[in-house]
Length: 498
Image 1 (tube, one colour):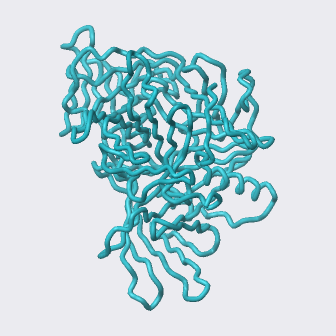
Image 2 (cartoon, helix red, strand yellow):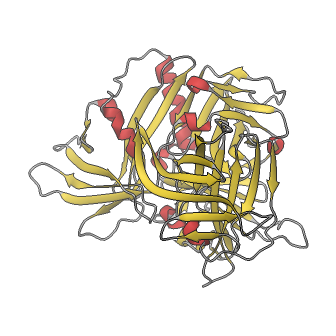
Image 3 (tube, one colour):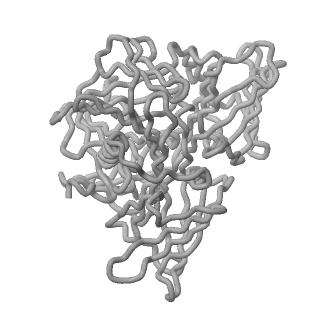
């Protein structure tokens, strides 16, 4: 457990506050209109969309978000809270409840009537579509925005996001790289068990919590203490998460890193880089495996991880990609293999071939990737694979998607302390007027590091870590860690801190 200093701009503040208000609202017994089964089809398009107005210059930071939060009471069906967040100027944003009577979703067409006190309602009408683009864009929309009787403006948008169901994260999460005590368990019927920070390994059923489908983020509240749990994946650690605990009026929360895998063999990178690393990295994700034809049934937690990253060594330098391949057939132990020049990836067939390390003339595994959106109720998968290992055939599905750094560009992200962050390109950022070129970026995890190289064999004391995402009404945001101090910057400042 690590204690960190937290400035006044708390991480994911807007979303955490919204989660707390939702839990209070539903627990009070206030009856709210629930979305119908047809309405819930909008959940499949959950995400943060850039907002463009046809025929006009782009408005920096303008966005539209389909923001779905699940409210879970132990032993009961989830409550879907769907809202539309809209910012037409990149400066102000509003949240509109989908169940407030002003919205409709039919045949992939969303219609939103935006009330105006002194004039007719403004009408947003947009049509969503899933895509299978190599660019990584998962969904787009086109449509119109304006008042009745006046020629509306054409609008369009796109996202790299894909909503993730809670069930994908089912597992037991432990401290100390999987060798420590149990801290969290996500189980059947979305049941959460948690230690509430006591580190004894004794878990309690969480009676109520909130989960955001875009940030894969849980909020748990008890006795004035807030636990934020941000989910992710790792090539070696399997399913992972960061748990930040904030006590009332505390400026020094505690942070824990948890994972499901208990041991990992991490192969050394003894060979040269593979020239097709960037192409393979486009299929970055966490593939849940199942047995199509194998004499040894796989664990339900078996996975293949494709984790790409790139480094930029200086101003004007091109990104250099590397990929780690993680594999676990039992969900407890994993092996991480670097994608090197002894392997092949054929971009024409999207097939990865891994040779047998003991006999390079023999093949250890061939994996063929197929990018195709497949609907699963209110959710969907983005890529499926077929993996052949000897006589065994294994299939897998992936819901996650790499997001380019420029997806977080647009408006300058700031906070009330005067910090500022600009995304200049996929190879450069500027933080507090410092140009940062020598970076490493992990598109699957939206994480960037600056000054990441060790100094005299020790971690660089002047390194920066950036974790990008979205935070409800604030739009794009970033959690910045420097010298054990956590700050947050936002495209739109949280209303309560203005």
